[in-house]
Amino acid sequence: MRYSQDRDRQDKEDRPYKVFKIKEGVVIDHIPAGKALHVVRVLGLSKNLGDSIITLGMNLESKKIGKKDVVKIENKELTKEELNKIALIAPNASVNMIKNEHVSEKLNIMIPARLENIIICPNPNCITRNYDMKTKFTTISRDPLKIRCNYCERIFDRDDVELK
Image: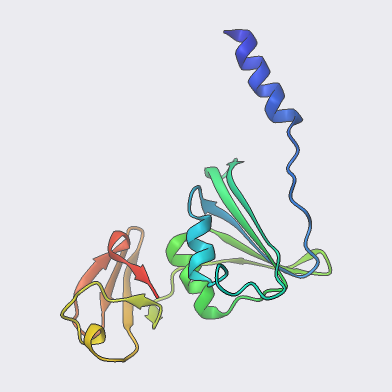
């Protein structure tokens, strides 16, 4: 039994991370394990890559959260709307802006008080589902997430939220 534990520890210590530095772009760190592909999808990266190289690290060891995912995107700057989408998926993520291969800015994102046009209202009878108009939500609580639609006034939690 002890041999197996020692071998597992040795395998982890000998296994280097094979993730390259990026010169310019963004690194989204401390994403809950299994959520990296969701981040890629809501940022539209699976459809429009441009000249960006995207590196995913999934199910990595983390002292902070146990297991984590990491997304590195070259030649990308995130908009406020994109940061808000990331906050809904990974509220404790950190976002590192990279310039000249160094972290130029580190952002700890959080769910904003108002969310505009990034969530689809789960209520099928809401006016925003039947007419072409922007959705608006107010954050009632962040942990656990509770948001209220400004039109139908229904309250939803994280499991109900679908991002545009």
